[in-house]
Image 1 (cartoon, protein in one colour):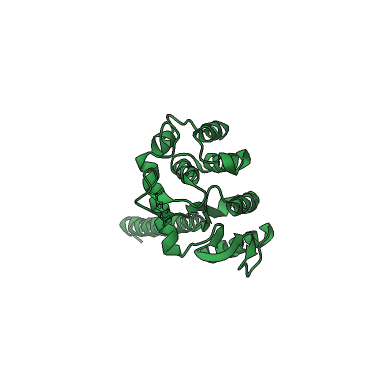
Image 2: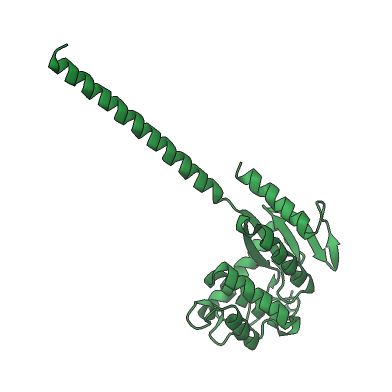
Length: 233
Ligand SMILES: *[C@@H]1O[C@H](CO)[C@@H](O)[C@H](O)[C@H]1NC(C)=O
């Protein structure tokens, strides 16, 4: 073997090694990317509610217990039930429990849009804890914003729902109308209706109804785990 032949073999050997290493690294990167993108598929959970409805309060309470078990697997959203009505001067919609309920819906939607998840959820809980007859009132919104560590003036929530906390500001009312329309496309009629991964799984209307797979926290948790595993299989 001449010296040039040896160096040529060495060069080929090196190239082969580098190729193999590159391939391994790419493979590794791909599988990491695949894993992380898979882990991001959360289960959409929707509660169809009205902010002053006793059934909604009950569902939200139940979902709070579910969140404590499988919170990191859920993408939770509240959708509001009302009737669009252009004769209504403030909200352009009629709410079953009066205009204060419309205001409460708007405040909660604005908190959902501009506050982080846990602050929004605490805001909703604070509303409920204040009592149904106080939901939607400006003083309740301000007090609960404080409790949930939402700065009404600077977070965006206030500008969305009204700096006066009336729930009558344009952006919030638009969000409310979009929510009503979204509910209609889902066939949402009753507060409270629970959807897991796009499927209507349970209704609470005075009592639990149409809950084929159960209505306890454990039942919802199980259904969410099943949907999560299916989505991330
Ligand atoms: C629409 O709003 C007007 C004004 O408040 C009210 O009188 C009427 O009953 C509402 N219509 C419906 C269908 O709720």
